[in-house]
Length: 484
Image 1 (tube, rainbow, N blue to C red):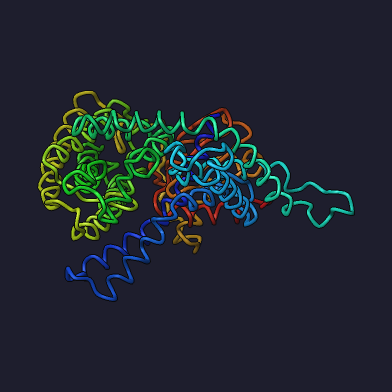
Image 2 (tube, helix red, strand yellow):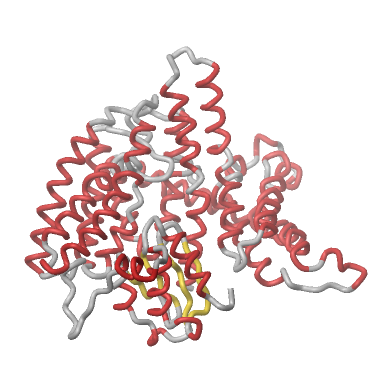
């Protein structure tokens, strides 16, 4: 079950990674809008809206691809087919037809059937059917529909059946989600703070994506991201579930990285600096925090809880003073610059001031706690007898190979090689691997490559936290596998 949830979390990152395109288009469009509008700004804004308006379809396609073993095109087509079946059958007009009632009497839930939740369900069903039936061979008379061609047909049938279930269940589910969202949003700044806390706490499981969908997208009527970028929300309110992340990702976490560097052992400072500098820069520039968070999440869980509390506090403060900014991907400098000029950005530069304060808090609090409780943050791990830190760059120079190829070779060797590695996959920052025997995995050898961390998530599943260059390492690992 944990592997399934981890795969779902990874799959949700694919559609989310498309959103920066909308941010760039709408950010530039709004930046050049003189107030009365012009051709270029209208063109760019409408182009960005084209992405935001079809986010549920992106999730249907992205999840379908991400949850299949072969990441094949027919799986994506099946996810789209499933989504179109549900949203057409359960459109307000069709529901009125099916139930033989007036359109005005149809439950409001069906006006919001085109949502991320339905997109995810469609993708999951399509992926499950693809994994099970994409190799089925039908009798000669029906041979044309064998294999991959069979999957969209089965998906359409399955989603038609699910539509009947949703006809009864969706109004109840929708009402519950709206109630939950309204309860949190009704708490104002406190609700934003609670959301920020649980957002960070759930990251180790990957389930933070489910929570994000309630507040960031149009799942329960909040749609904080969509409304902020379209300018259809309320100034000082819309963006409250995004703004508080900027001080943390741009300033707080990089300051925590500096504290970890300053408390590292002298002989490990060089290696620690190369790791923390890279992940801190990624956090500041793009808002990609997982490499940095995973570098201490399991080494010092108590520190991570402190980080979650501070994140909640940041969202609470920003919401209290109605300082708002937004992001389409994550709360880094790129999204901050793009969103600062939008109509619903309210005193966004106060988030910079808040961020500087949080940088001081993070640095001194992390440094105090690390030293006080001797937390084994990067560079402070216990020395092993006969320990030898592998210099990847030196190996690169000796072998003449690309540094990612050298890193991949050592990681693959640490995993046990072909005899132990069942499958290799990756998300935005992590290698996701399935192994035959976890006892054959040499975590020390893997960590000696300089990766932020190794996370064992089940009896046969392990993740190697690499960072934003994970794709390059994953490609090299695939080259090493004899059965790929």
